[in-house]
Length: 244
Ligand SMILES: N[C@@H](CCC(=O)N[C@@H](CS)C(=O)NCC(=O)O)C(=O)O
Image 1 (cartoon, rainbow, N blue to C red):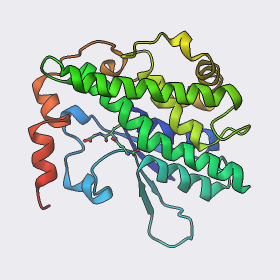
Image 2 (cartoon, protein in one colour; image 1 turned 90 degrees about the vertical axis):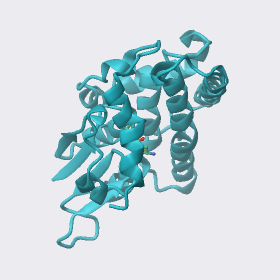
Image 3 (tube, rainbow, N blue to C red; image 1 turned 180 degrees about the vertical axis):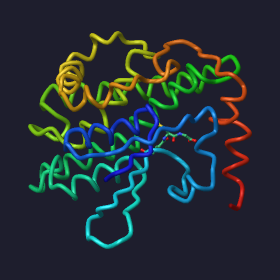
């Protein structure tokens, strides 16, 4: 059995999609970040970086009695691809196409869209226009990059659906109708791909559990102070500064 330590945010969702695509049995262990549920020594023992997702496999690659613990969503996706031989092509050109778009998601799309969403929705005070503009424009630039690529390719890695699509889709699902200047119709190839992936039964099953209300908002949310302290503020930083 695989345990997936999870929240309904986009990073956990990627791994849920992969598990659904593979039809592997798994158990979702959900956390409420705003209640400080990740700020525990038990959770930090699983992931020193203190974030979800984390995957725990009691039937690990390579065998042995100890479960395999994997954190960082891209590593979780690669682990499951290695375990099953699926959704990460072996042929070098397609393989590195998938891995480079997976890296693009982790290094560029996630941080830029995450920061754009942060400054638009969650910043407690009137938003710093520079920060908001910086990440909004970068987020939008990445959508132009993806749109051009998907004009010429069915999926991110070419003609095969791979872990790169599973990594990117949940981000577009939560962010692209929010803080950007250009209307969604601007990105017609991205939209074609988005709808195609959305219609996959595994993706539908992995998104049954709704996003938190705050993730669907397009405007400033005003998170209650205690939840903000646990997610971004004093409680969060005090925990991460502790020796443990
Ligand atoms: N690069 C990491 C990002 C993980 C991440 O930021 N997870 C968020 C939820 S989507 C989280 O755990 N936030 C809680 C916190 O930072 O305390 C990955 O892809 O796994």
